[in-house]
Length: 322
Length: 283
Image 1 (cartoon, one colour):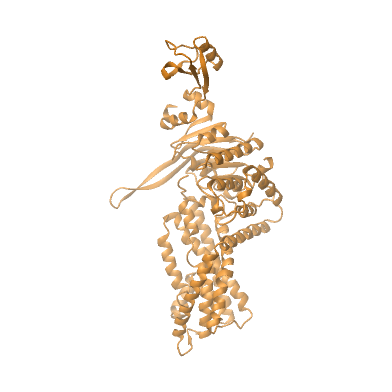
Image 2: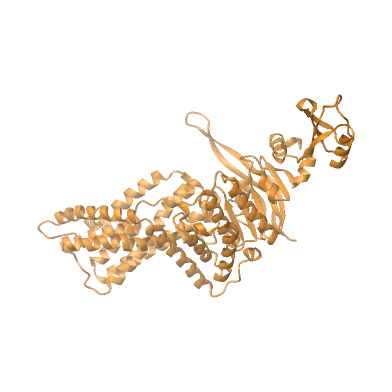
């Protein structure tokens, strides 16, 4: 495995002018990205999340060469993104969920054909990639429709194809599922999961939809106020923040006193004592079920996985505690 | 999916050939993009034709009974007007804010992510647009004018290719000027002021409102040499109506080429500066 993204001490400052009197305006420096370090291996699928204004998109724009960093070192595919942007463009693919890289007035098919020439992809290679994308993303029904007439879901499938036709080593996705319905989201996620499984394409995904991350990424980087506040697996985030799996037991009759199970403290009692919720710490599910079966008649047992949205919401609210 | 993400194959053929192929593909796409707006083209033709009559009658009135003014006879004036009405949309002095709009909305980020320099890709797309306008907007006024007025047809064989070259260079030069006006959006966000200034200057100083030869001689020289405006519109039309002897015509087209090179270089410089201070807000 080799590193395809190497970022050290990345900073981006913007100067904004704020009103400071009737005519006077003062300059203020806003730090959007504040010393981000990031190394991504080839083939890795990385979720890059953070609240609005945290610096996610700014980081992505610096990694792709669109924005000039204020300080720090960046290498993507061994290239300096801003100085070698044109060369880098041949090796990366980018999808901005809120912008389009397709030509508004042209049918999707013509846009793809133009991209073949722009990226100088041999015709046979282009045809193979396009055929596979058509199969996996069901493009055929709207391939001859001008982009301006496509629905958001159709356009996003077109955008994904456009970003992949030149065979990029790294795919940057900035909120690719924003505004999509459930079916389109599933189609996009399924496609990206397949891409990750079947190739060594590195994928960097920013999103507000944590289901995207859970479905696709093993590694999660959380950024807030321009700084990385978590870098590791989703499981590591849960254990770091103390979020636990829950066992929900439905009882036929309520117990006179709350039961005590070793390694699984009682989390809460609901439905007048007919529903007990235990948090799994050192104990396993089987131990909890066995312990409960000895105490009361069980009607139903269910296991609730830790809610990543809840963990991340707590993280956004108080990153300093983590 | 394996082959979907294979890397780009090593290039075959020379770099120059591949560059021209890419450039040509963007030109063709530009043509096709504009070809989708046929009703707009028709509306434009009607407007150009109506104003053609208006301008032609005014200039012929200026020529008066003497039959000539500022070195143009009546037929030359009619050709100047009707060819000018057609060229207006080909050279496209006005009404292009695509780049400024993309800078303002942040869509420019997509242009920067392509392996083609933004000035090159916008130029190629503009040549495609001009190609479609040559068919849809240039031909109708050029064919309608002679039905109602006596027009001047070139008498020197070299005039036709020189006119074609002069129009091509004018398109490139005008693109460069429009690019620079639009690029002020990198600094100003709102380009309306710059566009109004450009509209005013290009209308008066390029020869659209009246042939620049109507101006006193002492004003013409600095206008031609110190500004790109006459090279945008006046020069191709002067070439077509053979206002000057052949060597002078050649010199004027040479001046056009020099301005085009200078302005395109300025576009690249401005683009490079702008990218260093670019702010793409939101998302």
